[in-house]
Amino acid sequence: MNFSLEGRTYVVMGVANKRSIAWGIARSLHEAGARLIFTYANDRFEQPVKDLVSTLDGQDALFYECDVTDDQAVSNTFTKIKEDVGTIHGLAHCIAFANKEDLQGEFVDTSRDGFLLAHNISAYSLVVTAKAAAPLMTEGGGIVTLTYLGGERVVKNYNVMGVAKASLDASMKYLANDLGKHGVRVNAISAGPIRTLSAKGIGDFNSVLKKIEEEAPLRRTITQEEVGDSAYYLLSDLSRGVTGEIIHVDAGYNILG
Ligand code: NDP
Ligand code: KAL
Image 1 (spheres, helix red, strand yellow):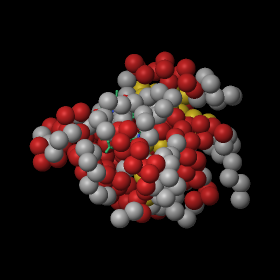
Image 2: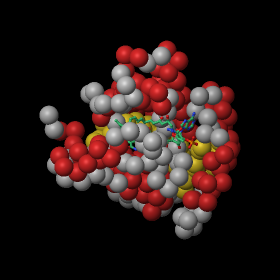
Image 3: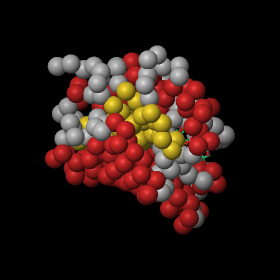
């Protein structure tokens, strides 16, 4: 079995900057020989993403704007991708958003709009992109999304995002069941805390990282590269018998009681 991704094409959604988990995934896929397609929420991020990708040697990437809250934008994006490359072999979905005011205080205070926004961008977006992307995976394929422990149990301040991640996790499993018959596998990586743009400005993030360093079985936090390599596993034939799974890339923290 050849585990190189030479001759394969993957869509990476959610690179904001060099700290993004999506960027760790892009680098792992690039090193394995894959051709990459990047999508970003609006054209404000086009040049920064292009500048980052120019640092990848010999990468002949494509770029598309795709706001995942817009059904037509998602559908248009994958129509264009089909026209431009034909077949794709996988997709990394690294997208989440909640209003800042809903990521502090008590979950019970979440507004209807805040609840719906978080679920729209962070969970439904997987469903709509999987529907648009799967038909392009004519040789079979893989979809990977990013989740967090706060969807499985209560984590301070994660609040509405935890409920959205629970929805994302369940959506991932239902999608795995629907798309498996077409040779498309759907899995999630539950990453440990990493300092990214999303995590910026969130109170207490340092103390979260410190707790991981003190208590996680590996006694350290994890990196974008480590998530990237697990995504490579899930998007390659190495994991050909795996679907509907959540792999924790979190230095073992989730096993603690
Ligand atoms: P980043 O801030 O780097 O990435 C978040 C991305 O979400 C951005 O690229 C942003 O795009 C994108 N996004 C937000 N709204 C939309 C939208 N409407 N349409 C399209 N894209 C949108 O943070 P991370 O790398 O940390 O986050 C990636 C994923 O990893 C998220 O699902 C997050 O929940 C998950 N995760 C993160 C952990 C961490 O500790 N950092 C831990 C566990 C999971 P743009 O910049 O173009 O607006
Ligand atoms: C318990 C943890 C501490 C942090 C609490 C909540 C984190 C929620 C993640 C969520 C994606 C953050 C936001 O939506 C931030 C947003 O309100 C403001 N930021 C932005 O708009 C920036 C500019 C853009 C790029 O961000 C997005 N997302 O578009 C959780 C920690 C320990 C683990 C984390 C950070 C998990 C996670 O899901 O990211």
